[in-house]
Length: 582
Image (cartoon, rainbow, N blue to C red; front, top):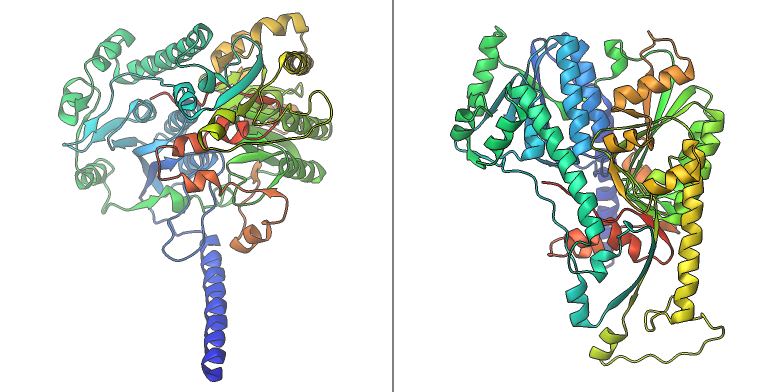
């Protein structure tokens, strides 16, 4: 028995050691640049989440490569434009998860690739939706499989309301907000859109639909009215979409490859995947200049504290991003900082703490703000440094306002036969109690608190935008704006994506026009062991409810910013709803 135990322990140790060796070997192999043959087609497959920062992936054999980020898509097309080995690009959409601003970045990058390189782009769509077709409309040719569905039938925006469900189980939500459009708590207190919510979201939907019609009409050489009439007849089979002029033809994948081979006069069809191509260094293609620029990514819900490497892609923890920003500010080799924000907001105090650190960076380095899909409420607040703000026409921003919400579970406890007894000192000791609601005095105190923080929010925006509070106040009230609307109202400075933001930063930093710059993204990718080392006490972990509910109908709620943010006590600077337009 003793020999058996010793052998078992020894076997475990050897297995763990072998695993470590394999992981290290895989990591080293992953660091090597792939070989790209001459006369190659770059396959840019968009599937899964397309975020600013990729979710962590485990470096074990058999694990799929991590998904492409927005910046990696931008970089791949930028490199392919000057890479003589790349002769064409095939954009393949497989129902990726992304926002409309990200789609604008990708579409713009495709257009720039075509203009600068003269190389063709083919789009191959797999059950495409409106957002997929929007990106693909920048390609020279658009194809789909002969039997596929083309899900172009208009745009729809839906909001789920939980009040009736909460009433049935005996839960009420105490909500106070500053700003008539600040309706983040309405999901729990209403059964349908308020007039204010309907007004704002109608404006958002109209703006996105108009953008789609404009780009699709340009690409297909039809009027916006003609495209709208076609969409009203959707969805389509692939054959019908060809007849409507939405597609250039139907092809199986091998048929498309044969067509590209013949069109480009290639001896054989060879392709490299963008996930592998991202390992090609810009320097190897002459795209890394003398000056270094840091792109600091702030993605997710804003919360206080620290995060770890496993959760930093889904939340902005105030202490963690502060450490990243201060490290960048101390680096003398970095000539400028691009802060890339994709956030619906979150904790109001954490947002203020982040703003102060961003101001520290701004005092030391040239700084430009680049907004992605979302930079709303706390995500907008943290951009108020007075530095240039660049947003996409479809960025959702603004939402200047604050909200407080707490659940009252007394009815639920009664239904379950649970009672609570308590002792307290002080009139407002039950302020955060989940058993008792607010009395008149407590609600009056809460309203005063909310209003005070709202006034502070207005002051910060007025300072950051260098305008009087009286001009900012009518634009606030918790209302969200598309980037184009925000530009008209002076809430952002310029429309554009990564290229425009980098050009603005280059000018501000005094970097010569011919310097292509070295772009470094923070937080950078970490090894598996560095990720494990980041799991320290006191950091925020996201493995709880979202993981347990991932295969249930409540998965979307558990992953939403409102669920994760509202379950934490305190005043929130968070956008009204998690808006998805399909």
